[in-house]
Image 1 (cartoon, chains in turn purple, red):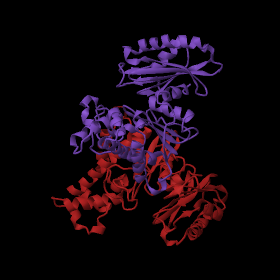
Image 2 (cartoon, helix red, strand yellow):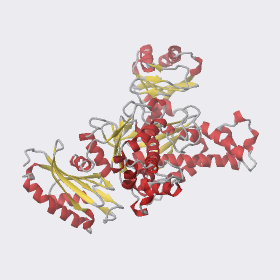
Image 3 (tube, chains in turn green, cyan):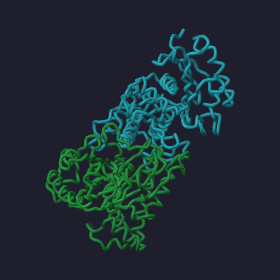
Image 4 (cartoon, helix red, strand yellow):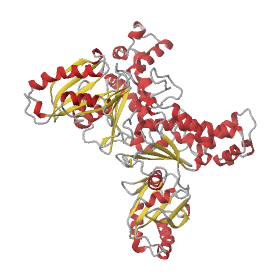
Length: 317
Length: 317
């Protein structure tokens, strides 16, 4: 049973699963769980489902009077409005006033924010970016997101949607993005989706044998590339090198904007470790002007992949 | 004679000339003048020269007791340290503690800042970005500089040198920059220097006749391209179109970082007006994600090219 007088609920709303946890002020997860987001046809039934799961958990920990509120990180969420706006990976289209819906249902304060911003908040409070006023968090998963800290707080821009670094161009007239239609953007190459596409392209043009050829087209995921690379497959290793090169060049562009103390890399793609971060580091330094060289650290997130977003979300309230 | 009780001296220190003015709090220039920066072999003699010019001006306007201080905008100037650091366009190399030197000589407070940041400050106080909390100023002259406002104030980053947008890559493996050695950066294409290079390249490959061929290689400046374009020369017009296309793509990248209310374009290159800003506007919108399209204004600076930096510098104190 919790003894803290300052508890929060952190929620990480994703296209497939929604993770939630009861969290203390110092970031201790008292208990966590998950529901399948896609099981709920609309936002109202999702909020009901969440309430059904969380109520027993709140009671069990005798947390009712100690709860400061609920923080939610979600794709396409806008901190300014509390709405989820035109999320492509959720069943609920258009504009969903989720913060208000959750607040009304639970009778608690609820604050909503973009998932990458929430991850940055988690890193700033509990991770490698602790006490950094200026850093950039890049989340490399199915997509590429970003949360930017300047002067000690998250950067929102004039409408709340600053930090769409995954959609910046890094290869003029390059690969067409599957959803935005933009050409040569960072996400087209450096997301898990982009890595799988690179692997298929490289395999198609390969003049060397590769374990990657054992996979059917729809099974050739970034995870498969990782497995083959760890197995010493030359082509798979070169997929990560290619990706790291592009990533480093993009990170240099980002650094030259806000001159951060560090760029923190986070997400499933970073499981590839040095295979991606070594070429990224080299390419990063190569694309900086002299006064920036050696001045901006590239760091791996120190947070657990599963917990970063719920921890960050808990800091919203 | 000034009746204000709140006067400032604004100084725009450039590689060729240094402009100075006595300015009121509301931005009225009481009197201005200039000295040739390059005439002074070192910073100490430059400060002496400046003092010699400014003293009679201060006395004439009976301004001694009304002066709040001296603000200076300069290339490679660091607001945090008050130093000019490794300026490539000045005779004085290494690190020059200019703010302290000027303050000691005049017995007045002196604040130094980067020239593009100072121009942004001028635009924010007196120009089209008045009252905007989030905007980006891009200065397109011999080089490409930038001053970025977020949350109502200038963005400095953790070492004072944020906003080096001219050095971001926009064409992978593109044109090599004459001074940084970086490839395909915004400055390589969108500065006056870059435009002259583009003109030479296009002329070399041209299959059409062009007035540009009348110029010797070292006379083919961006000004010459402008003159020919205004005269209806097809090749010269296409030089600005090419430049605008690249500029727009770069501006989209910048917008996706900080989600500003506007991007303000300033500097000699913008004399080309619609010839460059129309293709830039089109390319800009093409490279934005849906939620950004139509949301970020591209504006021309409303400040006089000669006065923006001295006005902005006066706002430093």
